[in-house]
Image (cartoon, rainbow, N blue to C red; front, side, top):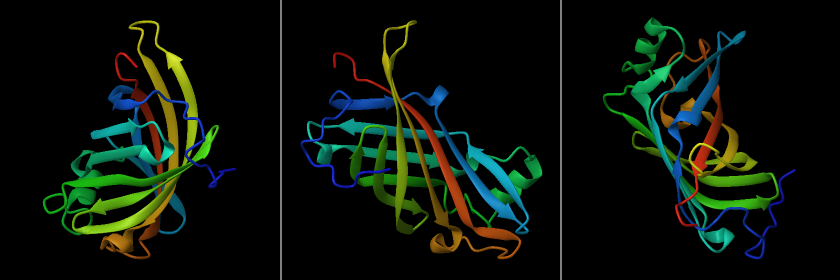
Amino acid sequence: MTNDTATATTPLPLAPGHWSLDPFHSSVNFTIRHLGIAKVRGRFERLEAGLFVGERLEDVRVSATVDLASVNTGNADRDAHVRAADLLDVEKRPTMTYRSTRVSGQGEDWTMEGELTIGDVTRPVTLAVEFGGLVDVPMDGSRHAGFEATGEIRRSDFGLDFAPGLLGDVVKIQLDMQFVEPKGA
């Protein structure tokens, strides 16, 4: 259960500084209903993200940029259609960005409020975040932090309302992210 009453006195489990994304162990996944009877799952292959941890909880910030042309649903023809003008229209909307505005919680369960922008539309999106923990990687001695974030958006909120009934309006999001601690932290 998320505790939204965390204050600046809540100890942060991460060292202060700019944590970098481990792109080889991170993914942006989604699920959408097709014809109302089945789910189509996919992912975006290219993303950039950063995590800034300050001295106080109020200073924590996350930002991410996803290359929408990197969509992969396991079907090349479907992926080409998703990139086309009647769906994502990657020519006009090449990226999707997220910027956190508030982080709250403690222990393993956190909530991240932020703004998601697709094209010229920005909407608030709240994600439930599970902190997976910290580990020192034996190969290079770096410290990694793992997170899973889940939430949902409505396509129609972003002007992506092609084929209602054929495709569901709700898109479920699952992010699996690893960040690397700043050197010298």
